[in-house]
Length: 293
Image 1 (cartoon, rainbow, N blue to C red):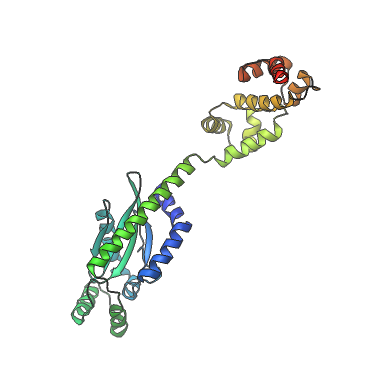
Image 2: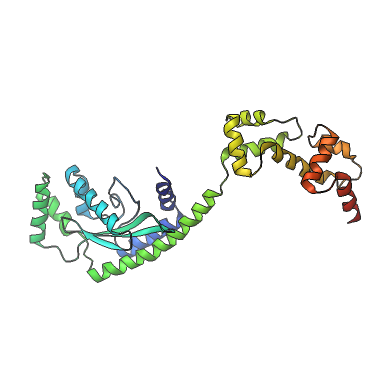
């Protein structure tokens, strides 16, 4: 699944979409779906308030293929805004694009309705259309399903399209929030690595040890760690140890040499050099400033 597909799946499972979907279906009596740009399924199939006729047709593999072709055309025609299209059986569906920035990530879709009250002539045409596709229907069952199709006047359908358009904008904003949050989300490997370093920073820690702890190669871990933190492994550990040392320097009873070894430095000289590089002062100067403050 591509990134847009994952985003649509996340939005479909979000509370905002679930609540809106229930309210929309209860208010209009129509199904609603949030579908990806490319789909090999009928978006409204299996949804609450699915049209009985469409449910009947969805069970027929040959007519299902024709419906999928219409779904593709509908998506292509709805990239700029709401679009309504009528299938060969006389039922209409409306789709509106859901965008994150300029990128269309999917569509809100509703419909499976007729624009006018179903007629005997329309039913006969629908049967003929099905027969052309090699689909044989039981007449009584087909008749009941066809004449149970909801009827929505064109003007009301346009209003529903505008309503979906407003909600699509909200979903787009939600999608943008998710995208930003995901782009800044930390890799589980980095999270585990930071935790391991935190727990073992007082020891003689090396890159290979941490890479093994998070089950990655040294090369991959080194590249991933620098990208995530902006620091190489050595500088990151040095800064962590320095921050720990700054807290310990608040205790006047601890000697600087004790603090150096306590936070994991292997020599006082190295500690002094790293501390001054990171803080801009020697440990002695930093402690004196704290005392004066």
